[in-house]
Structures are given as structure tokens and as C-alpha cells.
Length: 109
Image (cartoon, rainbow, N blue to C red; front, side, top):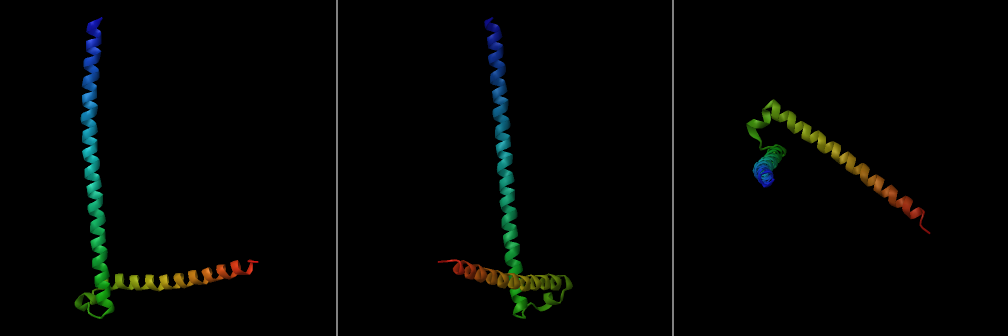
């Protein structure tokens, strides 16, 4: 009977070792995935900064040859269109805020 318990104990210990090893592997995989995600975010931030600098150069008229490239010109035009749309929406928000304040004040005793 004791032999059975030793076999069970041995199998449980071996199973626990396998589980611990697998958990360590999964932990390392998770860490590498987080590192990759961080690197991608950092890359995106640098690309965003680069784009903002190129856009600023265009607004200053200092973009030079790059400003004549059709692909860059299309992107700059898209940014300008989005800025125009943003100004319209911000103005709309201000109107709504003022209307909300006015209606709130009208209902006050």
C-alpha cells in the first residue's frame, strides 16, 4: 500500500515540476510580448513626432523637396482637413456648452 502512495507522490511532484516549468515559460513569453508592445508604442510616438515636425516645416514653407512629393502632400492635406474639421467641432462644442449654461441659469430660482 505504501508503494502506491510513493508512486502517487512521485507523479504529483513530477506534474508540479512540469506545471512550474510551463508557468515560467508562459511568464517569459508574456514579458517578451509586453516588451514588444512597448517598443511598438515607442515607435509610434517617434513616428508621430516625426510627422509633426514635417508638418510644421510645411506650414513654415521650409519643407523643400519633400513638399512636392505627392504622397507627402496628400498626407499634409489630410491633416489640414482634419484640423479644419476639429475647429468646426470645437466651435460647435462651445456653442452647446453656452446653451447648456444658459438653460441651466434659466431654470435656477
